[in-house]
Image: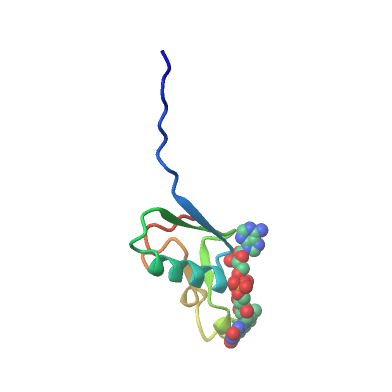
Length: 85
Ligand SMILES: Cc1cc2nc3c(=O)[nH]c(=O)nc-3n(C[C@H](O)[C@H](O)[C@H](O)COP(=O)(O)OP(=O)(O)OC[C@H]3O[C@@H](n4cnc5c(N)ncnc54)[C@H](O)[C@@H]3O)c2cc1C
């Protein structure tokens, strides 16, 4: 008997390297553009699980702000659930 194996077509995966400004904004924009596209998955790869808002870094050095004010987790509800980190 010959067994016939039928495979589900794999989702296309877009892999974004780096969770900085470029990576996070690319992921957010692609998620918006591909929101109804079930065959595509957006995957963000980053060394750190946080996004650092560098333009306000000097205010941390000057003790005007706490570091928690400019650091946000990448696995946050603000990034759509289909993102993988
Ligand atoms: C103090 C400071 C103030 C700034 N102020 C401004 C400003 O006012 N206006 C402005 O336009 N620009 C400003 N910049 C510049 C701005 O931060 C950068 O231009 C911008 O962050 C570059 O974005 P990027 O996505 O290319 O890189 P980054 O934001 O540096 O992101 C790179 C990401 O890749 C990840 N990564 C690196 N190597 C690996 C690896 N091997 N594996 C996995 N992940 C990895 C890092 O963890 C990081 O998340 C400032 C920079 C600094 C340092």
